[in-house]
Length: 124
Image 1 (cartoon, rainbow, N blue to C red):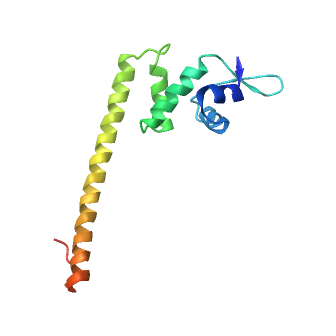
Image 2: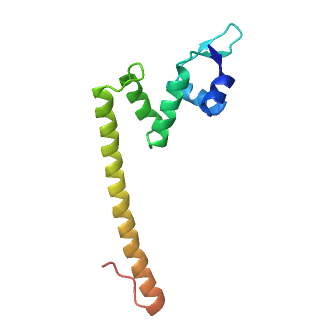
């Protein structure tokens, strides 16, 4: 068992982040009689996995749904399906952002024409 400071040091994650992971039910600890958090050795791997999933753009809610699909550190078919669904969700968001950027480009072009020529801004 290790205390929160040791887990933070071993994973490179702040104590505050570790507390947040607990609040989000991503990480669990046992409490000593004095209330100190104690983590099992496998918490290092779990924190590293949580960090990878955050870095990949997943929300804590998505991570919470995916974590039970990792069995003893090994991927499962359910995990792969969940990750693929997250990727599909991201692809849709990217498409939506590209469309919004294209619309903004049109507005910028129209406004630039107005600024240079005095011609009224009209959507094209």
